[in-house]
Image 1 (spheres, rainbow, N blue to C red):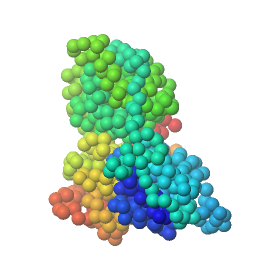
Image 2: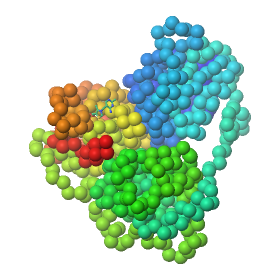
Image 3: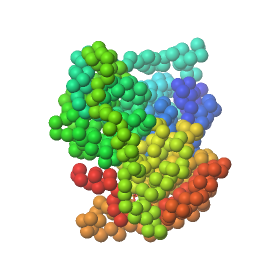
Image 4: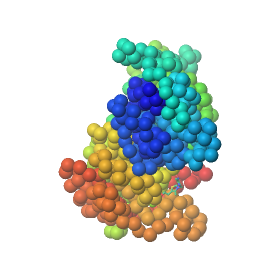
Amino acid sequence: MLVSEAVGTTLADLGADTVFGVVGSGNFHVTNTLVARGARFVAARHECGAACMADGWARLAGRPAIVSVHQGPGLTNSITGITEAAKSRTPMLVLAADVAAAAVRSNFRIDVASIATAVGATPERLHSAETAVADVTRAYRTAERERRTVVLALPLDVQAAECAQPVLPGRESGQIVASVVGATAIAVGAPQAEMVSALAAALATASRPVFIAGRGARIAAARADLERLAAACGALLATSAAAKGLFRGSPWDLDVSGGFASPLAAELIRDADLVVGWGCALNMWTLRHGRLIGPDATVIQVDHEASALGAHRPVDLGVLGDVKATARAVTSELADAAPGQPLAGYRSAALRERLASEIRWRDVPYADDSDGSRIDPRTLTIALDDLLPADRIVAVDSGNFMGYPSMYLSVPDADGFCFTQAYQSIGLGLASAIGSAIARPDRLTVAALGDGGALMGVSELETVVRLGLPMIIVIYDDEAYGAEVHHFGPHGHPLDVVRFPPVDIAAIGRGFGCEAVTVRRPADLGPVRGWLDGPRGRPLLIDAKVTSAHGSWWLEEAFRGH
Ligand SMILES: Cc1ncc(C[n+]2csc(CCOP(=O)(O)OP(=O)(O)O)c2C)c(N)n1
Ligand SMILES: [Mg+2]
């Protein structure tokens, strides 16, 4: 068997069932082997799109996504998407064809390991025909178990060599019980008893505790355990943007903490006397550069990685432990210490009522600046929130506009929000939305983009159409790099370099095969209802010509921090 076939076979055996990529000669065989072994191949139109689709897919599928790229430019094209995935700790394996070690004059020669390392990914390599199966297994396991984005270089000469048929230990029994590297079962870290006691004591004495759950809590599926503990100590529940939706439906849900927070959420978090971050970095975005933490508040952080504790800001107590296990241990400790009634903490009937009517951004009054030729992005988004089915995924690109879809479109749970902002690149949102839509075909995926990001990633519109994904693509079209306009405009700088003439993005969408509508007033949204009621055979692109007199609230907030 050829090594390229052994690699594809091994990956299929390990569970790789979905592959995103752009195929050239160097990754042709390995990709086709995966397909022959039952994997679905999703052809992207640009390798950055492939990486972002894989990223969006893996965030929802919860297992490593596979990306397959040609040597040289295939890999370099994918680097921005790989960087986002690596910074987000997305489990992802990039099969990166590479020239033979001896091909020192090849056009395609680049230093794959250095590029991977430089962007925070983990470099791996097929070292030889003899080690190929162990190499690919190690790479996959690293992606899966350590939640790393791994770039596996596949040298062409090694791929073309013969090797023995791969046999994974345990396959004979019909199930993979162990691999050639690593253990099958990995123990979940329980927190130290003293730490559990200290956290329980802090919660027992807090008058206004707030939990902020992050990506780690989402990945640990810790909602129920955190809610139980919060109920016992009267804590309010917030999330980082990456975990938005985790507490949806709870009457104590404050939604997102940080720059996106609604005025009431920000007020309540700022007044907390104890903030506990659960699997949450507590970075400057989640805490508004620290300004969301009151001067006398105690800050506690729980994380299963020691390096995360106190990494972004000092904490009074850092608890090393699995989020779920820690929440459970603290709940029983609290029950032992204070049996009977749950503590009131921050919770009261009056606050519950206030939360019900004020916590959402869409309930905050605003002066609508729609003028008939352009629609206020808040008005647009509230109208869409009313129109679109609740069972949705909102995937957001980067830019001034991004607070509107993030905070004015509700999501049903944490799987309903795909937020690829770890690298803060524009142009990734459409492709990550495609990955989300493939992972969750049961939901309507809404890609929310700025005109700048949309035109940067536009080639993947063809992918949406080709795959027949019933997606809605909303473009907040201010005919500018709005974030830059609002950044520099107030200081009187010339803005010609960040402004553009009007583009008929609806016509571009139709050219790709989308249904499309240009929206300047709420009344223009009629075709959206028609599309929702129809067979949704083609994606719907909404080119919303939005007002842009002011920067969005979160952008102004972010500038205040710098
Ligand atoms: C790849 C990349 N290039 C440039 C930037 C700098 N940048 C940040 S926001 C932005 C403007 C985005 O414009 P658009 O998508 O139209 O959204 P808007 O800000 O107008 O709402 C730019 C250029 C970036 N973040 N990423
Ligand atoms: Mg714009």
